[in-house]
Length: 461
Image 1: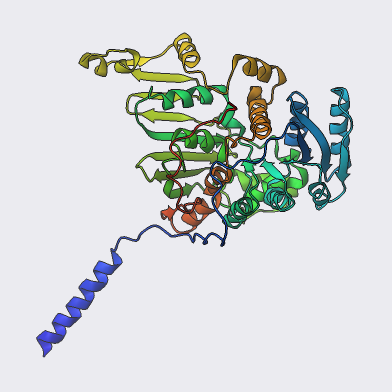
Image 2 (image 1 turned 180 degrees about the horizontal axis):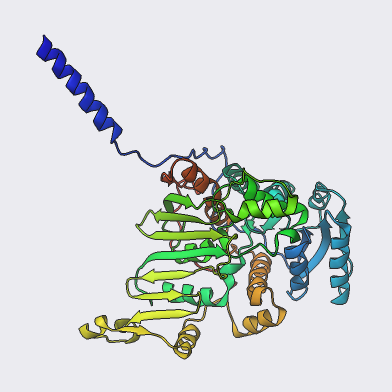
């Protein structure tokens, strides 16, 4: 009996040891069922509009720049302007007058006045440039009142907001596009075309980031909202500038999807100091680390590195790196393209595979012209550089938005892009708070991620 009891005790110890070393799978995040009667909005179109009637909500830093850009786009009527601060509305009214446009209807005074703009029956598109906390709120109200929506980044700050935007877009059949301007920068546009043409071989790894020291700018954000956000939340709170262009290269929800992610952060050093300088009080509860890194694996075995750092003096960078089996492209700190010799010849030899060619600036320019992105006509490029907006990419984004609406075409970016690019904030926070554990990324299309084959732009016939 003693031997039997000893055996049982040893078996229990062994079982406990094995269970303690058991591999724990990724944390699963609930995917709510699609409400009855709804369908996905992949390739969504709305009836073509000869004139797109626009209402702007939020006329601070981003909104005040959007209004003048729209005065250069054919087929636009600026109907209404809205901001909490009446002086911001008046500034945009003067912009319209200076460009020879009539004054628009105006709304100001409180954070709910946007509802009056959304309730109008003479607006087709609500263009949202408020602080992050109000992005989803305004977008949801606008769609509920029959408006298409274009919303500044990040359009959602939580999974709850993401699912609400998806469900509302699917139910109302209205566009909900996030205004990710970096997808329209010139180098990114040309590299996307090169990747689609196979110049880099098979893309296996990409990188993107938002590295931008905001210490000189915190006080420019109305009511201190942006620093407050970093004070209260962990994770990559601003991932979309770096993530958007590389997600398009990987055909995310167009043949591939984010599968799992792991996030890590440094300690918070500069964040608490920024709060203390502004309040004069000790800050011991600052949540966001100075630097956050997120690593993602896709369904097709590709990897993505995304970084966020708005606290340190690192030079500005969105990283933007494409690593392919036969080539590489990178934008920061200088533009670089490196290719195997086999990618440079129509009839390569075996010896060409061993040659690595670092292209000169002139050779890169020639390659960009050879693979000019189909949306970037010479005329549009020239006008974009004249009008401006982060060098012209903002104008290209706005121009494409209006072009697609006027022609009844699918937009370049849909509500699932919005969801996938914004979800890093909360999913990263979950990973960090659970010891940097892997987290499953929800399939925001709810089963349709492989229905569309490859990212593409729509054009009028």
